[in-house]
Length: 219
Length: 256
Image 1 (tube, each protein chain N blue to C red):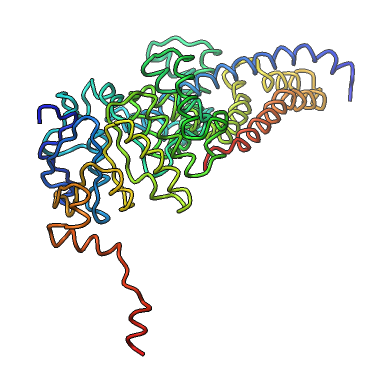
Image 2 (tube, rainbow over the protein chains, first blue to last red):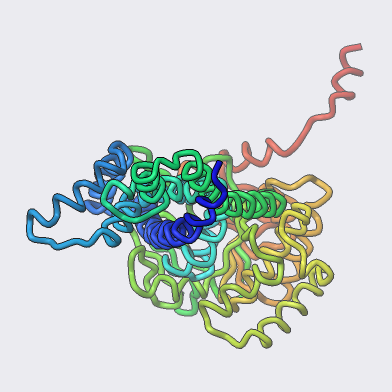
């Protein structure tokens, strides 16, 4: 292994890692927002919109991210919607992640006993207040394990961004392997950087999960 | 009827083809304590849930101080604030401490001053003997303690009427008393209460009026003494008999 090569590539990988993290975080934030909205819509069984949401969830969960990205990146400009690669990456990840987050939150919402809603109503709370102060806090703590798994999953999925020419970690590794044949060095850096990004998420996730479990709401 | 606080006017409640409440009418005056008794499945709990519009009714009208209680109406949350309800199963919010459970609705819904509500909550908790549990979570409390907190939580909203839906039914026998004592105390203070219970002696002690419900209809309505000593209907007699036991020993001796 050529250490000089590694030292030389390190800044390049650093930059690529920053892009991966940036797009990943933004995509995940939008996933959470989409997921929450979809989960609440399904929880309240909002007519019509609920159908749209379930169609979206099925499409999103049963097609590969790469295909979704191609649709957004190559398809949208064909119908007159201009897109740039970074926006596409974020949008693609949010499109995929939204459904996974929705399922995580929905199972959390459904785990909250009906009596909780009723006692909130009988205290004079409206639907919004009940959702915000009573249902969501309980639902989210139930959703935490699934939520953490989704965050890690989505962060890893960013590796297909290279296919729409985003200069992420995967792109960098492929590029260097192709150009200079420094395969071993590039692969080591690739794995190393993914671990640097993902291990802390895993560790924090485990700690949060354990704390929530210890709080163990139920009676 | 003019001074009735809560009026139930000929309400009908159906689940599918099943008629649960079949033309119930009565009214509750201020400071009155009414106990509703009846066999399981006679619609007692459903009646309370209808009053709070947790269940839709198919016919009839429920009014609180002249205002109609209607599901999906804009004023429903406001009306519900004036009706306190305590359920059979523990309905405290598990993610909040006892104190936060009590403060949540007065602060967020009624927008009252937190310190003021806190003082009130603490003095009520002290009154029900749970002052030192203010910082505990519901899971750390016994069933009886949870129900007492639920009562305090309802009281802190300053309701005009309190509904109790079999609040001791899920409790171990030794915890029933502590909850009933709190309710007796409330009755002494002149609170308006509508109670569904299976505790007959308690019903007799606390009620101004007993309503006996069977098959979705009011079968008998009387003072406690009248109802328990001289029930007028055959159905009420049968019902009260289920709480009596003939001595087995006497029978054994006869057989010998």
